[in-house]
Length: 202
Ligand code: IMP
Ligand code: MG
Figure 1: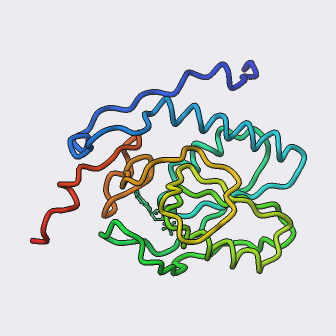
Figure 2: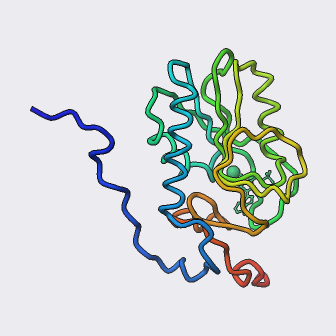
């Protein structure tokens, strides 16, 4: 017979191996234990706040996938997930303010409690647009949770309900965040060396 297990019986999260991409990082802004601790706190907060209620998490691909995967396992109440994808900057490191829906939700959200899960809010253009179109679909409640926030860069004023970490205005990668589609697999969040993105095109 198997014994019922509780989460506290599980081994603490492992630290991932070093990789050659580490050399492209100027410095680590948020290390793995710091991120994991904050994700646990956010998960507990959501579990308490939405206990006994319907809950749908909507992650914005691709950057939020790593955060979403950890966050949902830190949430102890039943919930559903869905995904949207918007256009990204490509190889540029500043926002153009242009948002395009590349993938829409699978299910209607009318009458549901939704939380939009974002990796980072920079200008606010992406979330400003997304929350506007999702509001039109008449969910019961809609709230915004972002792992990272760069408040200095805000162009669009959006009500952010929960922020994992407010960070200075640096281009960061890792834990789902990319530069040119690379670095998403780093288990920490780091500042990219300027030499990586200031290389003249070949
Ligand atoms: P916003 O529309 O300017 O708020 O930009 C939001 C999106 O830009 C995020 O969801 C990220 O995908 C991307 N982004 C903004 N800042 C960074 C960064 O420092 N590193 C990686 N991606 C970023
Ligand atoms: Mg994103």
